[in-house]
Length: 467
Image (cartoon, rainbow, N blue to C red; front, side, top):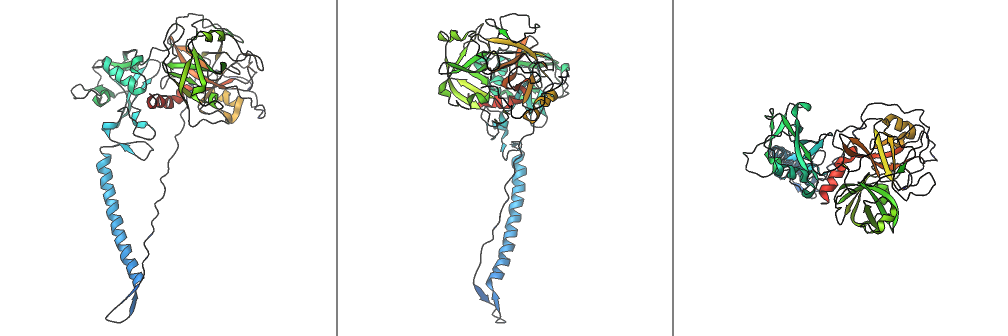
C-alpha cells in the first residue's frame, strides 16, 4: 500500500526521458505445460515347463516373457490405432484449450461456463481500440470484427454479459466503417439459424453488406460532469474538485485510509494486489466513493467487500502483476460524483508524453503526512526503455512509468492502488494502477504503475468467474 523504497539496490538515474511515439504495450509468453512421461512395468512371470519330445527343460520365465512382450506389442499397437481414430473423430467436433490438455465441444464454447482450466473457452468476444469495435473469435479464422448486419439490442446485451459485465450496466451499441479496420474477413449474423445464442449465429463472411462494424458500450464509463482545463500542468499536486475524479475510491480498515482504488463497474473496484498483503480478509475492508474530503465518510455509504481477488502471479519482490479486484456486497449507485472509469480496450495505444492524471489521499511529500482532501496531479507517460533505465530488471511488461525527469510530481505513500487516467476521444481511460516507486517525486525516479491493458484477460476472467 506504500511505495516501495529500493534504496539498497541503488539503481542508476536516467539522464533524460525520450519522447517516443511507440505504444506502451508488450505481449508476454504463456507458461508451457509438459505431459508427464508414461512408465511401463512388465509383469513378473515364474515357474518352469518341459519339452516332452526332447526331454530338455525349457525355462517358463523366458517363454512367458516372449509371449507377454508379443501380446503387449499387439495391445499397444491396437491402443495407438484406437487413440488415433478417436482423436480424429473427437477433434473434428472439439475445440482445444490452447496449451491446456483438454478440448471443449463447440456447443459448450462461449456458453458462459468455463470448461477449460484457463477459461479460454469463454474468451469469445472482446472490444478493441478506443472506438469499442466488437471482435469475436472464430475457431478457424481467429479474431475477426463483427458485421453490423442484423445486429440488435438483444445481441448487444448478450455479448456484454459474455464479456463479463452485468446486463444491468449495458449502455448501447453503434457502428463504425468497416474500411477503418484492416480485415478482409468478417463474422456475420446468420438469422436463419434456429438459436438465440448470438455466438452460435456468427459465421465467416468475406462481405459485410452494410459496410459497417458493431461497436459496443457494455457500461457507461469514462464520463464526468466536471469540466476543467486538462491541458494545465499541475506541479506538486493540488486539491481536486467535486466530481472531477468520480471513479476514485478510498479503501479503509478500521476507519483509516490505506489505499486508493478505481470503480470499473457497479460491484467492482480495481486496486493494487500489494494493498492486500497484510490485510487479505474481505470483511476488514470498507470502500468509500464520491467523497472529496476524508471527513465526508461520516455521512457517506461504506460499502463492504464480498471478495478480495489478487492476481495469482503477484510477485512480492518486484510487484509484478500488482493488480487485485474487490467485489462489493452492494453496488455503487452512479451519480455525478460516482462513476466508473473505462478499462482500456484490446490494442488501444497510449503514447509516451500523453498527459495523464493521478489522484489520491496519500502523503503530500516523502515522509510527510497524508492529505485530508483528494489531491490531483498531471504527468506524462515515459518510454518503456527509460523506465527500465531507471529501475533495471524490476520493470516487467506488466508495468509502465510516468513522471518528469526533474521529479517534483508523483504519487506517494497511501496513493497505491489508485488510478492513472488519461482523456482520449472525450472519455477517461484507466491506463495504470499506482504500484511503487523509489521514494516520492525524486529526480530520475518516476512512479511505476501496473499496465492495465496487459492485464485485461485476467480482469475479465475474474468478472465472469465471480458474477
